[in-house]
Length: 62
Image (cartoon, rainbow, N blue to C red; front, side, top):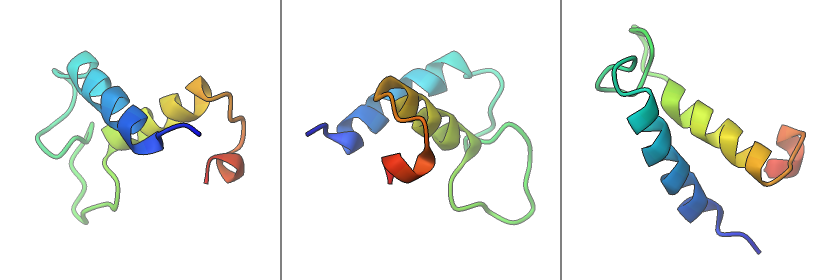
């Protein structure tokens, strides 16, 4: 079985380094008045994780 948490952390650090100049200190591409549950960069990393595991649907990932 894949270790999703470890793979997510690796992809998150990679995504942060790629989008370093485009995200703010919260990890979002723009300011949100209400704090979201997941930052924009975490959503990008989660999407990349699903694609790397060949999961086409969010239901299969969760």
